[in-house]
Length: 130
Length: 126
Ligand code: HEM
Ligand code: HEM
Image 1 (cartoon, rainbow over the protein chains, first blue to last red):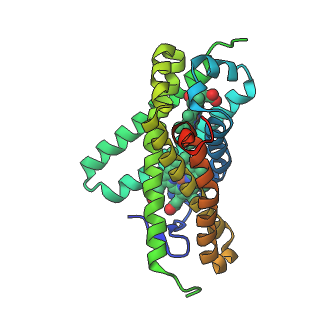
Image 2: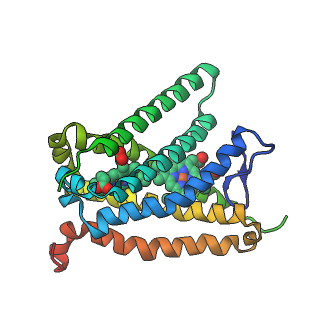
């Protein structure tokens, strides 16, 4: 069970200088970046454009710009790290027993790797269209 | 103790943050797969996209947007206090401010997303 800081109602800063402290800081750094990237992405997809027009050729045209590929890949990296490390904390809080924990954590990391590979592959390799 | 901590607000903030975080995570797992299909099977992606622009799809997107906005604002509040401890003095103001922003940004956002659904009824077009 992680301890909760009563001032923030968030996880309190872990003691020492180990892996947990590293995760705690990275949750915060990826959090600030996601504040900009994820909210911008959601706004672009719903307020600037509309899901009804966002078909495969629309995406291919958007990805004609390297900047949007870089933006999307950065968003992908930030959100995968942040959300999988976040869910790791949640599993740590609720899943009891060494075997159950090994199983859920391993599944979690396998899914993370699959999404990392699939997400990176498509943003790197989708052919450029005019 | 530095401050008068209201357990009720704190517990709600924590529970909402956790629930919204896990909900957005579930969406992202699906979403990376659907964007993968843009390269792997564009026809299947285009079919799936119709779910996003359907009425139930739009309602889910409003809920997703609300979860994202709450989580983002509350996350920022946590960050501010963690990295800048003097802000603890204003912790309650930060909590209420995040709800004001949530409503002020969230309501127009929901209206825009739902415009094709509710627009005709409100006379503001699709
Ligand atoms: C938009 C900007 C975001 C900010 C500012 C933010 C901030 C934070 C912070 C500071 C934490 C740590 C809380 C703690 O240590 O108690 C956290 C936890 C978490 N975040 Fe985010 N986050 C953002 C976006 C996201 C997104 C897009 C997802 C999912 C895809 C997500 C999923 C999670 C999860 C699952 C947790 C763990 C919750 C828990 O332990 O109770 N976050 N977030
Ligand atoms: C229902 C709301 C959303 C819609 C309609 C949507 C739509 C799209 C579209 C059309 C793309 C293709 C790339 C592009 O055109 O830039 C994309 C990519 C992406 N979206 Fe979303 N998005 C939504 C919500 C989100 C959220 C909440 C997140 C996470 C915080 C997210 C994360 C991503 C990522 C990481 C990519 C890049 C995937 C890759 O490179 O493999 N999206 N999204």
